[in-house]
Image 1 (spheres, rainbow, N blue to C red):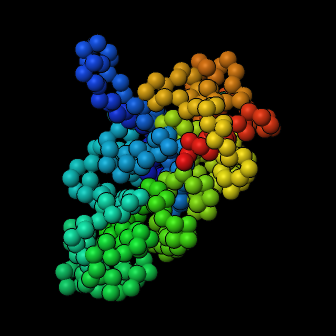
Image 2 (image 1 turned 180 degrees about the vertical axis):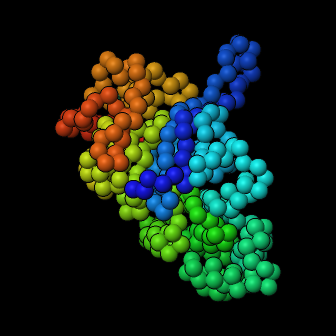
Image 3 (image 1 turned 45 degrees about the horizontal axis):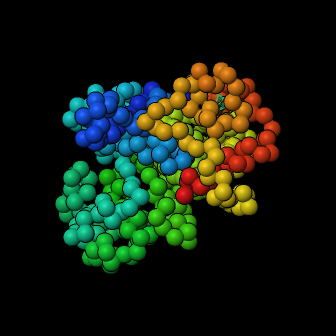
Length: 349
Ligand code: SF4
């Protein structure tokens, strides 16, 4: 991997969301509560790579994605773009950042104006950032449709006239219209049928190569993440607990949670999926973070130190880091990780 300055990086990123208090809670004088969505995330994203970010629902991966594109401001920590703190950007830099880093959302229906044709949507995107002289915009709209493999007559149609996969292509075309360098894709295909997912993923892979894009691919589907990513970061309770090149992570995980997550993947071992085990190994509440390792309450290898000291990410091989007090992950214990994997399989649904 390149030793150049990462195109994006985050350091000690923290984000909390206040929980609305009931009247009773106010009268009783109970202290306000907050969901700890991100708890000290450190991460580098290298130019030209696809970084997969995985974890269970509520692990903070979507909050992290939104902080990366400035849709959310973190409470603590720094997001850097090409080494510069994005919170310090003045108007011109901020505008350039907003163009160079684009987000594609899970549900394009929510982000596409239903009253605008595809031509109007793309023309607006091209005009806002003055990407082309006015006279060249119609031709560029056609180029963009061709880029995402939509027919030319799509330009005159409205979002409701398209299938989910086609709408996602329109969302990709709109993101590409401003010629970004980084794409943050949050659950890009999770609302689509499996056959359509493959088409959209293959399109994204093709575009990444042709346009030298950097892609941050946030997803809970490990098959997709393995297929598309160069590196993968695993999140748990608002922290990155393991990050590694994709094959190292999938074949030799170094964190007990990663191993359980892989064990829970239905395509790897469908016979283990069972709702009976859902009551075991619950995710701790993000309202009350446990002291020490966030995974201690579910970990089959927990020992005293884990309950008082939160482990840092430490090297486990080339480009491989894990946050665990164990020097190496023991061979699987037959019963406990299986039960844990089953509970994770249920909580991912
Ligand atoms: Fe398990 Fe302890 Fe490692 Fe946390 S630090 S993952 S509790 S062994």
